[in-house]
Length: 352
Image (cartoon, rainbow, N blue to C red; front, side, top):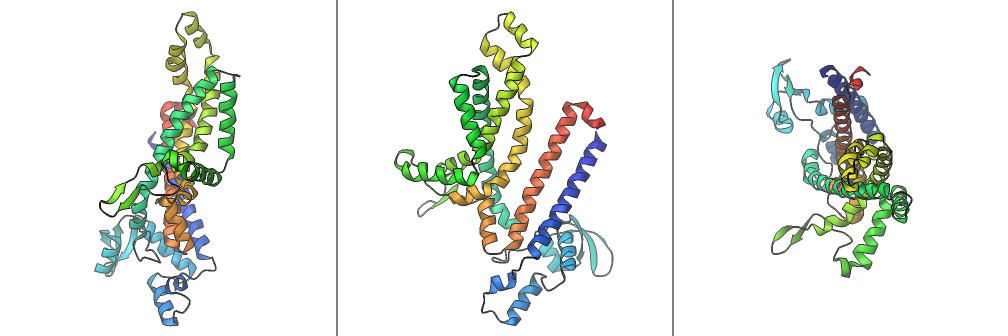
């Protein structure tokens, strides 16, 4: 089991290294000068050169990539001085020369071109909001999806089954940005007098007397929008799994013993039908974090997606790169955990 876990961890590190390479070279071959974006079109040559030197943009692409890998690595080579210690917050492991040390640190995502603030601090300001949005959307999709899937399976080929399956097909087919615009317009504008909801707004709003106030109603519309697609998938998976389980011999035996339908469905059938659903839920959670980009932007929800789109609009590439790497890390971690869970549940996976 330990060797299996280490092998999966190695695959995950290889994937992250590939993502780092693709992201770095993608945003460094674009015909955009970050120094010009930060200083404006009328900036003089000396100011542009100073900015390029500050962010290391005056070096060649391979050298910049080597420095970027060193910044992201938890164990890196750094100068043994106060400036480097302040920037990286590293713990010295051992010295390799008079001026250089091998140090242990958190991955350093550089600084924002626009605000000069650490990218990690910028992301930590918005990641909790996105995690709350993704978690509530997944809970909404799971509860409603499993319930509708069970109802469809129990009432196979009835109007309830056909209507639910039809809506699930629409939910899978509709892009998130289209569904978001439609939901925002209908429930946040046309029916706002009845729903009391706004077209846009973040989890925290500013009150002139109270300051920052938790505004949960602004979470409802983006939560529904983000949860529509996984909800539709969960409905179909639950329905298919339940139909398969309800046709098993032990279900017929339970019916022959005189057990009531509720006990058979929820105690015996549903428990054994949830395996593919649990897998889908774990996979979809990471997808929701990535899928929140357009949803947050449409609803003006202050989260990771909105911050990334705003940074992309201003060519603030360190923020965009840090955001993409965070999403990639979440995907890798969740996939590793799911693989390990498979190995625990099914020992045959270890031999694969």
